[in-house]
Image (cartoon, rainbow, N blue to C red; front, side, top):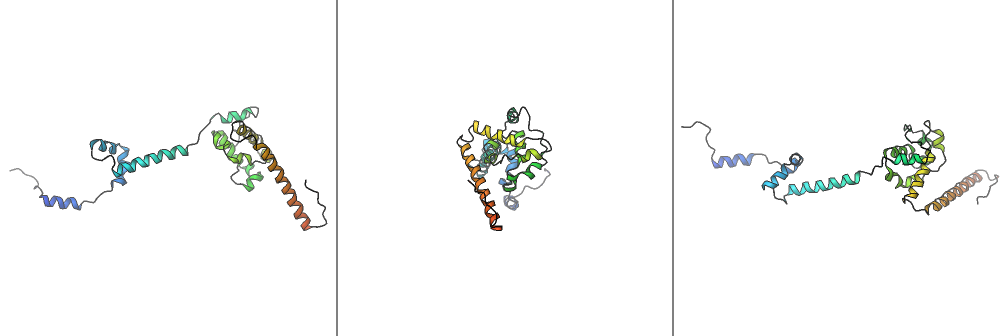
Length: 213
């Protein structure tokens, strides 16, 4: 007579199976998929090709790939060397991102996203399309304040002029915009002078006004 545990009855086996906690396989999908378990189970016929778990994984994988493609901008490691060709070989790598330029920049005071040190950093990292394809490089007033205050002698005004030239040459901006920009600058100066004169005369009517033409 063989020794051992008594064989469970069919009713007892069903009772124990029903009492076991059910596991949501979708929550364990990453662990399963990491080892290729799902693919193996599909091949073995344990999962149908249109099973919810497989559909969920396929959709997540496609979305992940699309997000990766959108999130990775093009890098041009030669971009800073191209900039240097216009600056007598001076590479814009001596910036230490101290923020002196940004603190002094009149445009940055009005538009916080216009940050000179950030632009220099992007040049050095090779984010060519990100810079040339953005309107921000045209916000610069070309006042040269940043260059004057920079302790590292970064010629930011010249660099911005170079960025604008390349943007025009490579078709990021139509050539006709140059004339439009000149008109905008002129209109801004007229508005500025008119506002200054108006406020001064309001404060002291005896002041003489120089006509703005």
